[in-house]
Length: 199
Image 1: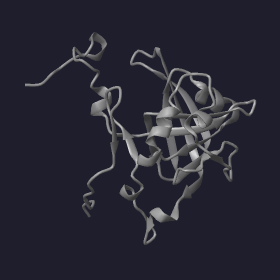
Image 2: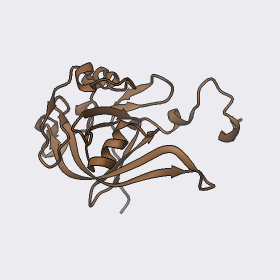
Image 3: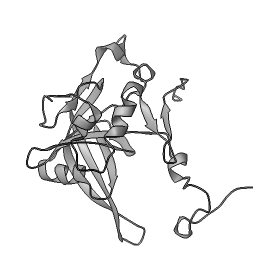
């Protein structure tokens, strides 16, 4: 027996299962600068990588938030890896209040090499990105949705060498935090297993 529902008619459950099913998802911890130079740092649970060459990443913002406004104005951002040690600080930057998220979370910024927005100094991996597209999402009828997808080309990569094992980046060693479903579910990368593509 399965639970079937049409999303437009409601799911009939205590909490929408969509986010829990499509998960865990990497967190898009995005640092940006406004046109006036003001800094912003915010996490997005709809984030992922989309291409190898050139490397493209993207995140979706439900609502036209400060990050989208900044990226439309400046065309640059930085993605910062959220590790287990940084999870609480990341959570502090999810506020909708008009505050300096860096100060609120007690985070130190550090300069980027290619783009203007700063990186999170404590994050072991950061991608410096140049915006390639900002797309307002649509429903199946072409109606506009209150969500904006921003894609960026990765033009600079910073990796803490402690997470390079024999020249290979060790995903689990970095203890990345992923977003699950519900109002508070997060996951840390756990057990690893390997599968080789068939020849």
